[in-house]
Image (cartoon, rainbow, N blue to C red; front, side, top):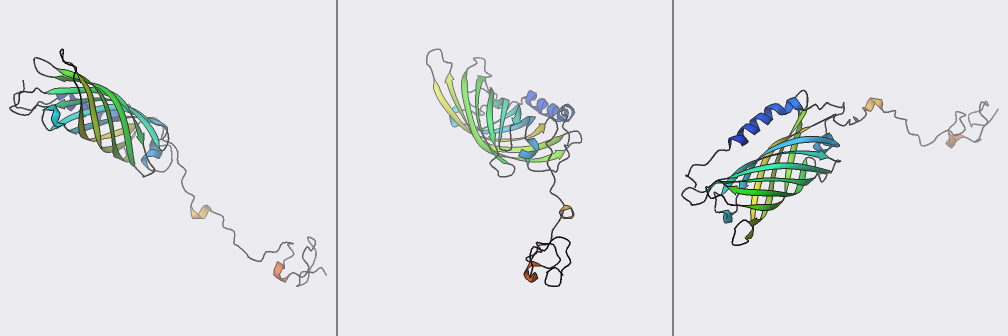
Length: 260
């Protein structure tokens, strides 16, 4: 039963700290020589790892504290400049309200989601689907299995160079539906918890960044002066003044462009 003191999930704390310290050491991204551009261009055709902390506005129907926290770890592939796909593991910790008869609990889930950059710079949207299990921490442990779907929007900032690799920061807000079936031995319970989420984390890509060609300098552009009165027969007299167009090449001409 809940004692009125919020529990701290030390696994989440140390996993976050450890991953933050180890991530630069396990990545091997190199700059391909191109200029820095929007995030989709930097990530295109690359695999990456991502980690995010989660804040949850809980559904009142859970009869738990109005907020919960979590942590996710995943990997993804940015297929092209617009579309990517991510797989993730999520651990959320729920706390019971002080003085209630409820127990603290946790929701462990795994899933996949599509990430879409709609040609708006570093802004993106996502749509996800997953499976999870909720377990309470009480002596008489109860829980449920869940199908979770989510949608939301985010912003990825970067890249920020760490010397041996690049790092992107990301922030998201979204909606998540926990469509579950209870484990009661006497009654089959079905319900849905609808919750708002906010996430903050980072992305570390693997491999060589795509090379992006720099725009040519003005000095590299050969500008040919435009003329509205060319000399088509090449006799030195412009067409407008040439009385004898079509003079043979190399022929000596007068001021009217006629052979002499």
